[in-house]
Amino acid sequence: MGDLSEYRRRRDPRRTPEPIPAGDELPRGDDDVFVIQEHHASSLHWDVRLERDGVLASWAVPKGLPKEPDVSRLAVHTEDHPLEYATFHGEIPAGEYGAGTMTIWDHGRYETLHWNDHLVEVVFHGERAQGRYAFVNMHGDDNAWQVKRAEPAAEGWEELPPFVRPMSARPGKLPEESADDEWAYEFDWDGQRAIVRVQGGRATLFDETATEITHTYPELRAIGGQLGSTEALLDGEIVAFEQGLPNRAALGRRQSAAPAQAKRLVTAHPVMYLPYDLLHLDGASRLREPYLRRRELLAELGLTGPNWQVPEHYVGDGDAVLRAAETHGLAGIVAKRADSEYRPGKRSPGWIAVATKKTAGPQDYV
View 1 (tube, rainbow, N blue to C red):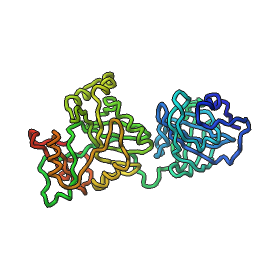
View 2 (spheres, helix red, strand yellow):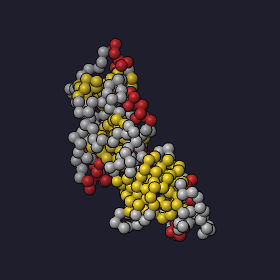
View 3 (cartoon, rainbow, N blue to C red):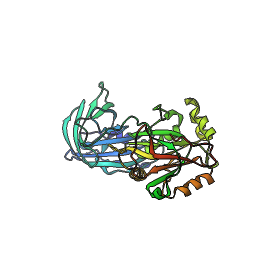
View 4 (cartoon, helix red, strand yellow):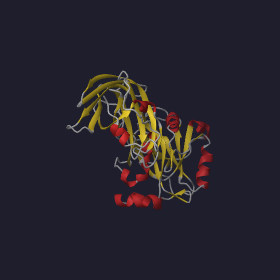
């Protein structure tokens, strides 16, 4: 039978809303219930819990269950939890073990294929967790396990690419007035182009040359926590604002800072990430989809935070958008064909960088 002594030792029923059964007698089910809880504690992870011998055998998986069979992820074996925990969600108070927000990511039934101290192999039948997975004990350490998918990825699933080269715009003039409603318009923020890759609740940032810049902007790592288990590849700009306007000098200080200085500059020169395109989402490439459809999917992600925000785009009326950019002291706007595909690494006529009159020469939007 399972053992809840360690679970009880770690928790005070007067301080936490978590279920803490009083008796020692454990219920016995059919050993087929599972729950996966998304746990925003000191670090984001997913708690995978499988009913076994009257308790929930539990593993903390920092990046969640992998979707592809060639990926192994750390799974830390934790103390058994009571069966009542299968329906628990809520806020564990600060100062308590596991403090943070816990939500139910998925729940359902599972089948046991193999279960011993070295290998637990199961088949999940949930809404989000489906298929065969193996939890493997590493080096005889009861806490150190790994989990991997033990069958091919779901049909149609495409692996999240490590990087996609940004598409760029050609300098030019506004589209002809007769074609105005076939174009969408964005402000040119004159920032640093950045591709953000989010997987397993972790965000990795790259500049346009594929050089990782995550350490340069530590405040942007939290984008991963907001997206949780969503896998995405974003395209946008990093901008430092001062008095409401992009400030290239302030951004330059952030770009040139050594890793040890980066954290100190977060307060002195904070940045915003402005994602304006979505290149990959949850197992599907979005490169061939029209610009406006990619924008719809991006909006549905709800990306709003202290250091990131999806900027507005405007369909038609490009002349008014350009005048607004000039009024607010911006470098210009970018016109994007509403039906344009994303062409990695290409300078496409489907995107046009249009400079304001106050800007010396056309802007090279990259």
